[in-house]
Image 1 (cartoon, rainbow, N blue to C red):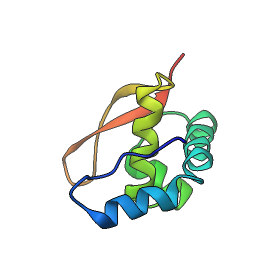
Image 2 (cartoon, rainbow, N blue to C red; image 1 turned 30 degrees about the vertical axis):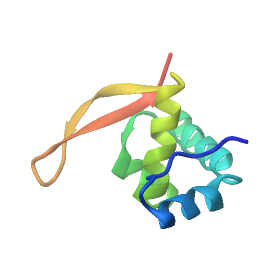
Image 3 (tube, one colour; image 1 turned 45 degrees about the horizontal axis):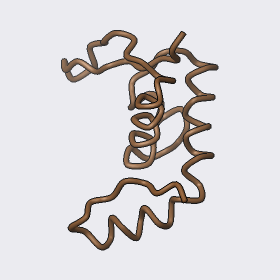
Length: 91
């Protein structure tokens, strides 16, 4: 069984990982497909584009990154003046 990571001290985190186990692959595919179609983007842009919450999108992007499918593609300055990493499909 492909178990999602969870906070070992948190029952709700464990329950959430169990609940997401069946859909994480399809959610990860959605993030990957979005990046293929739209090109490099920040996590926030991906979240907005997919209408997906950060606590769902970001772990899927991290999984893709750990698998070597998604890589850093530079940084951009956000409206608040802070920098954000852009993520793109590995070539």
